[in-house]
Length: 181
Image (cartoon, rainbow, N blue to C red; front, side, top):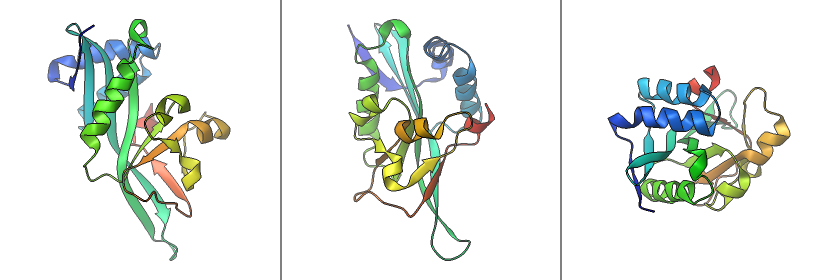
């Protein structure tokens, strides 16, 4: 099995759409990624190729955490990245390809200026890469239709600056495109 991890290239969009539609059983994520691409909001997008075929993709987009500064209406704004989506063609899932994408992109992002990375996903998978529940840092995320308990467990953060910040309260926001779909 020959896996190559690389940045997304212009000719990859059709393969990525196919991966997203297969992995998520629908077109919502594919439409979201296409809209982010049109809006030039893809901070980092990488793919995994297996024997020349694009079989997985990971995408990071700008995100922010807004937190009251303690003096009236002012808010503190931290800039970070939202990881979404990470997708692997179903027939190649559970073979370590998603983990390889995570490892390579986290290495790539090691020395960038972002304060954090957030993700709404499977806690057992993302905790292997240093993500912890965002609720531990008083950071929450709003997504309609997802029960608060599920978000508490699945909304995770990886602080890029040490020490990790514990806010009085914080609201994480993905790009607007995430709330439109």
